[in-house]
Figure 1 (tube, rainbow, N blue to C red):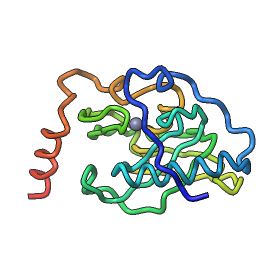
Figure 2: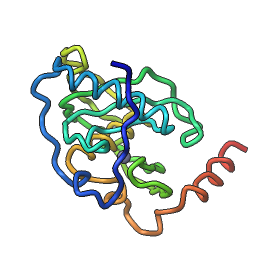
Figure 3: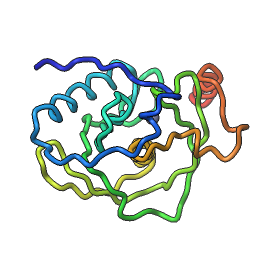
Figure 4: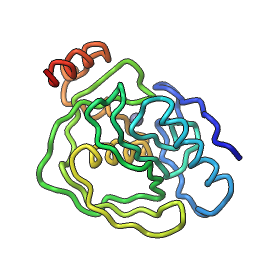
Length: 179
Ligand code: ZN
């Protein structure tokens, strides 16, 4: 079936606060269709990642799809990748702060501390176990999406309300950075 754009649920919807379920059968047609739908949905929304709970499907599965777009002009380019039943198996001692947003928390950005590098394991959409070291922005996306699987949102991780700003003010910061 052709990919379908799925509605993204927003802050306040209780599904965003649930612990998501392990994916038992990656080859199941509904899971494969969900992966295609998530990839189409995140591209359309100018996101760099989306987790299955954000479309009200509470599975341990997310897409990392970093690419430059109006919401993240400096994002590195990569193939959209489905990461299923992911784990963080190691992390750097280095912690870095960066601005994050979320398709489920529209209009808001927060300065969030994350590990600079992480070692991860996940199963890909073909059922193969993958082990990777992720750094910088892609490591940040992984940690943000991974949190979604446990019902945690980026606003839970900002150290102070002073580190929450609007999308409009964030866009001014990004423009300033490139000058
Ligand atoms: Zn999010």
